Image (cartoon, rainbow, N blue to C red; front, side, top):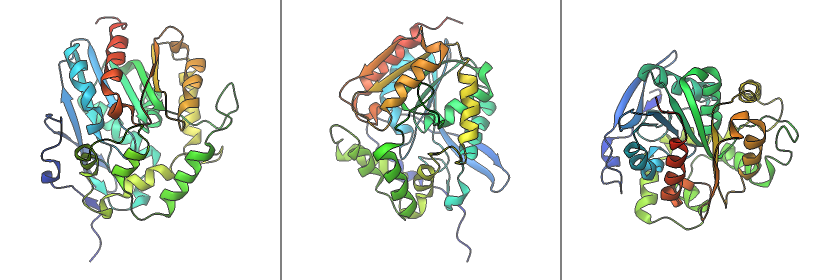
Length: 314
């Protein structure tokens, strides 16, 4: 019997998640190979001021943003928080080869178009940056601002245009590990990049979308898609995105944490290259590693709401 190409985590795996009272929403995304894929997203708050699109990275899911949603919704913004295909409550593709950078961007594009999101502020961390910033460059009229934290957009260019010492001693071994592995301890990846280990209840919530290794193709595949040299697949598209971002004059704020060496060099790149960063507020989030939303969600939420208050009213 041919292995199942599309997997769906049973709903009971998401019972009793800590501090996660949000109702699930689903969109059907057309796909030329798989026919239709179900993407999960959270939809909280009213778009009195606009919409905040929060994009997670690897190997997390929308659970990561649970501490930001309430404060942002209370400030008058609609919060749309999707799970990328392969993560969270969204459908999982069984084959690693099914995942490409173009597909990750395309799936989020379909969601934005289906929901017809306008006046969007992009909040991006980890892979949320390469996916979200490429999307922004393709449909800039839908976006009014960016709030970037612990993310990147590889471009294989030397300073001051890029980061000379990236990917460095952290990213390259991580790519090699994921390429050689058949399984991944999702919660331990989260814990290992935190300053303080989260509770077991929280770590179990990060494991919830993945009943066994067969559900984890995306968590392994996406890391191997990081373009680390000039000829890597996806690098040309990233450079096209940078060509647009080099002219982006709408507000672009950064809120990187103080203990994430894997993305730290990119904070200066965003602030130096993007015109909209010159007048936007920039903060340093203290006491957090890579998954800043998890460790210092309240601090990050305050910085985000403060940034949103600087944006023009509709």
